[in-house]
Image (cartoon, rainbow, N blue to C red):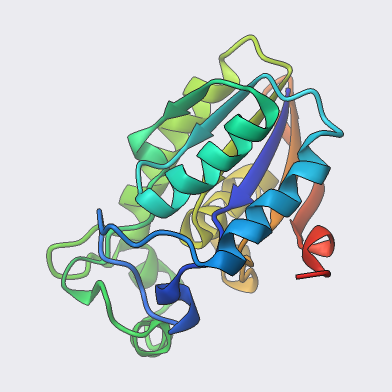
Length: 199
């Protein structure tokens, strides 16, 4: 199975470098729409059979552009939503990062923001949805989700230490591609935005 991960298009919250509130109604900017439209050129080169997405508006809006453009079906999976930062939602990412950087990796992995969820809890739901997706009969699927989700997926997909997650900063509209066979994932490309150079 080939799995093509897409980070949703740009939002005004992204432009401000802030975190989204869980379940907010913020949609894509005009640039964000163009970013996702540009992914169609990449996606058409693969025989995608189904699209999955996070329930967050920005991800679903991005996914709708893809399914409309490629005439595919869409399934929304709750486990693909962005990490819930609880009372930290809406804060600038740098402010959150400064607090997290003071923790060792194990503390960071288990830390639960007030009214939010930990990295570990996010990882558990991601594993569950990934298992659901990879147990399907499709040969190629697309998953539209979030930067934090993609960072959280990297140690799982690459079968490496948690610390590799911190090396990634996924761009809006980026394409990340892995092949899945016999229970293992093989990296093809990560965080590719070459299709967006004209935007």
